Length: 142
Image (cartoon, rainbow, N blue to C red; front, side, top):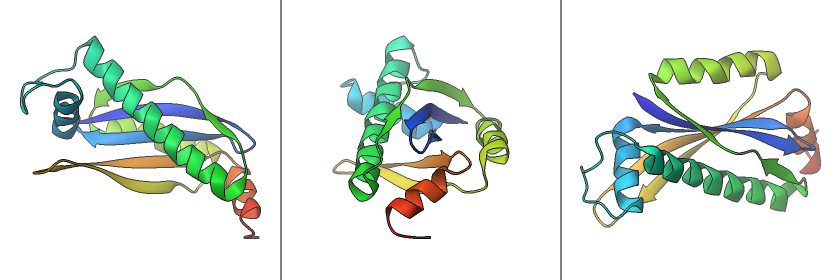
């Protein structure tokens, strides 16, 4: 099982964003964010889901801001949505979008570190048709 946070990206290079975490990693991240002991979270309540969506929102904003710094293309994320399901089920939604939208994705491994452990997740930016060309053109790649 994984937890996925999905956002739509608007602007000159519209795209989709998916941030995926293994379920146990998402629970541990919630424990850290909410000041709980490691292992306290066994299922997600409304506040836990909200915290994970906010992390997705913050990461998306940070990555989109970095992309803006390289490209000068303003990109704005939508309100996040959260799902917890089998990895294949969540990824199939993205792959269907990818099939309809384009055939490229930017994948960024993301890690949150504490003194003793790290939490790894994956951040996918899936550009709409034409968006990848817009981004690459902005950085001088034709």
